[in-house]
Image (cartoon, rainbow, N blue to C red; front, side, top):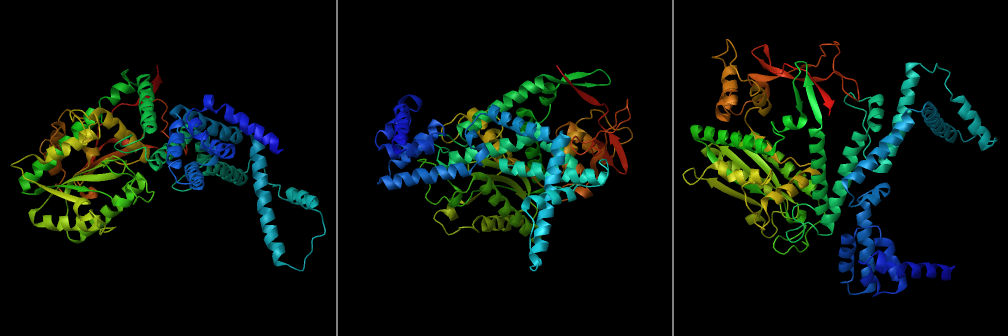
Length: 591
């Protein structure tokens, strides 16, 4: 038997040079047993991971430490994905789509088969009956079992068959519950979080979700993309010297996703009852899905805040907040691993920044401080997020604002070397030397399309940097831009849909707001909406929602999964009246 195993090892090693040129130089330096161990642990990984692990391992002083490093690293990498998805490490987005279709098809085949559903239901009832029987018999120690297991199982299974009619709603609901639990267990084995029965989600809607390719695709894509990125960060691929901001595989998959979306939008049309027909690509190019329009709108709003601050005599402050050293994987100058890193990932770093910001906002409220402006989240070279904030505030409250933000920025590990100098930075903006909007302009452009920025501080082209930052934000589900204070941008966009004055409303706040929105005047719009520091519920103009009704059939639109009535934005609400801004009904049509 041992001879047979040795022959298999020798045969495998003899083909290494052709099958895996990355492993061959390293395997030539060890005996055949260590070579077999290395081959077993690393064969499923792509070449770049193999070479990185081997380079690190063979720099260890002893063979024992070398093998321990290989074992520990591969174990950590495989813990990032469940066993059933481990083969998808560093896969393409097309392979992720195939896996999602496979999972949805499996669930669908079970859900549409009455025989399988009945079997699952009876098995669930049988398990419940056995569990309750065990609890009951264990509490009655004087009873003895004198029948065989097969007889017990047969009698128990027969006794749980329901006498209720098959079409009884209560029995149908019980079967749905059993099927839901079975499919939820399947999802958990894949590594996907199961659906919770809450917020009007019922068993039928959950089963429909489990049977849908799109539901699986969103979750599996997020799971695998984040696992890939975690592996790249763990191996120190993501840094200023190698793959800046995001790994190559994540960036490549994000670009492929954009390309597919563009093709889908170009081949899908919307048609209304007036015969107007447009491609979704044409519509997308006219709203904030278009990077140029998104950037222009953000700058317009920032400029509006700045003009408002000038009129009110408020100060402008630019703030940068970074994470403690334990969140940073690598040094920016050399790209070398940071020994203080504790395995924390970018999403955890952003959660830390959010938690500290929530504490700061609570203190703002206690001290009656209400800054307004914008917050931009962007990655540092190793993917660790940091925040840039442009705030406007009353002069007398400026020092208090700084003290609060600095306190919470240094609350965690504030005594470590360099924290006081680098963790939190303030730049008070002198309007005589430059525009406040100009301070945030490059951060907005860099994080959207990179146009006009040139190169980043590491010498990378801004257009390529924008692609990697987009991949980073998509992978970690990080919100890049957030408005702090001010009026609703959704109402602003809805007002911009109208190009004519409201009849009889020329002197009202409604017409003032519409005119300001139509002329891209965020300052005038904010004033018409009641100014700063006003709760949304107290603003004069709000969105109006209503159900979608098909005028031809009289049917109301329902949600795809749960069949609930869908309420969509139909217009605006002002002074107890509704003003319709969406006049047509649109339907999709494939090319």
